[in-house]
Image (cartoon, rainbow, N blue to C red; front, side):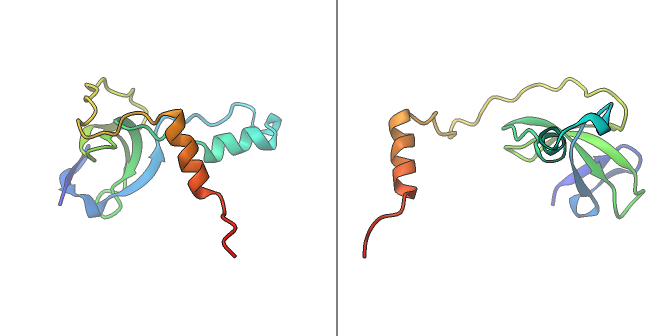
Length: 122
């Protein structure tokens, strides 16, 4: 089991923590002025990078305090933890895995879409 380093309690097993989404998302300054599309982007649209990603976590079974972490989404390894309100620390960007697939070609994408289209096999 992986250990997560709580800024207040120290290293604890990962099942003591809960995920809270992407970190550093600012609440809109004038929420009454947002239309439905802007609200949808604020509520539902988040980054989904491959590599280092800043996230919010809560130590649900321990101190119950929230903190931020930078985690590599490919390896699941925690690269840094820091208190809410602190700036994101600089962490080295890890090189992509050698087994990562190459970018798909337009021809490959066309075949993938064609494979999803319904066939007339009656």
